[in-house]
Figure (cartoon, rainbow, N blue to C red):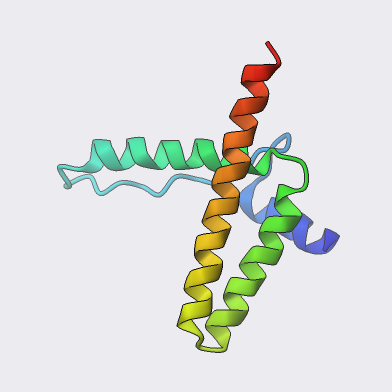
Length: 105
């Protein structure tokens, strides 16, 4: 597991415990480019908040491996269910990180 965590950290450029994943470049010609950039910035913030929670990174790796395994088995229902559970767990971790800030002022 430690090797997987280190590989993920190197791939995403983890800096001081925060994922510094690069934003997806918006389509310059698109009228939605400002909205896409704003949405992407929020996703990056929430990803950082989620991954800052103790134990979240190893849990995330297990979740992603399960999703990949379901896809490899061509089990779309399981892959969808696992992906939805992964997003819910990430959302909960991000939400808890904000609760932690609000209760420690």
